[in-house]
Structures are given as structure tokens and as C-alpha cells.
Amino acid sequence: MKYSTYFIVCCLVGLVACATPTSKQDYLNRFEGFVERVEDNHKKYSRKDWEWADEKFEKYNSEWYLEFSDDFTLEDQIKIKGLIIKYHALKNKESVGDMLRDLFKDDANKIGDKVEKYIDEDFDEDLDKIIDGATEIGDSAVKVIEDAVRVLDESF
Image (cartoon, rainbow, N blue to C red; front, side, top):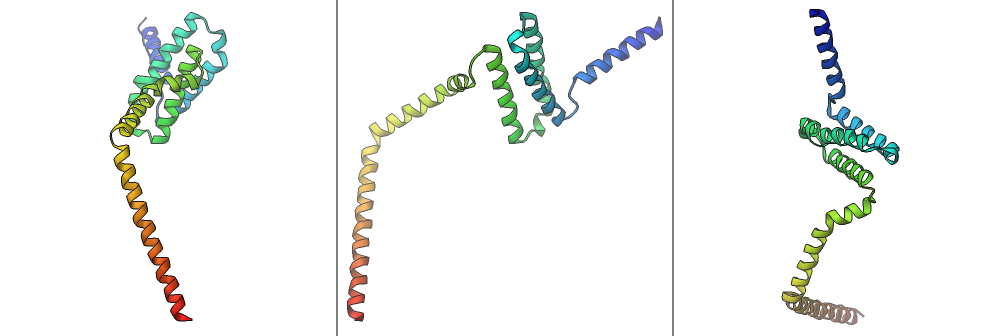
């Protein structure tokens, strides 16, 4: 009895160890493989399949991610964000474009508001400065050309 309990515990520890990524690269490869499997099979997933996938996704997106987060490069981060977006798009049957549009809608609206505010408050003043600067440059350019023509006339 004692040996069978020990054997069962060892098997369970082995299964858990095999399921947990052991390095940053292992994490990235497994996460990518997981999302590819979801992509290949998502159309025939049942509610129970999605529950399993969501549990696995949460491990990739939080527990395992945090374990290797200090090791990720910017390129790794971009790849991970892409996998997260792809998973959500597959699960929610949204196009990635729609999801990105929703994610960045608020940012685009804020930028639009800032542009409107700038046009209302500061654009006219800046435009006057640009016109004044262009006039000065134009006057300087005319003077330089006149000087060059005078030097040429004097040389011949």
C-alpha cells in the first residue's frame, strides 16, 4: 500500500512537471502551440472544451507568464500579445481587426479630442508663426539670390 501511494504521488508530480513550461522559450513554444490547436479545432469546441481551453489560457496568460516575465524581450512581448488577441478572437468569433479597433477606440478618440482642442486654441497662433517664419526665410532667400547675382555681375 505504501509503495502504490508513493508511485501515484510520483506520477502526479511528473504530470504536473511535464505540463509546466521549464523556460521562456518552452513557454513561448507551448503557448503558440496551444493557440494553434485552438485555431485548428475551435469550430467544433463544446462548452466543456472551451472551459478546458480557458483554464489553460489563464495559466499561459497569468501564472506561467509571470514566471518568465523578467526574461521576455520586446519581441517576445509582441508575440505574446498577438497570441492573446488571436485566442480571444477565436473564442469570441471576432475578427482581429474588430478587436483591435475596440481596444484602440478610446485612444483614437482621445487623440481626436486633443487635435480638436489644439485647432480651437493654438492652431491660429502657430499658423501665424509659420507664416512669419516662411516670410523671413523667403526674404533671406531673396537677399541671398540678389547678393549672388550682384557678385556674378561684378565678376564679369
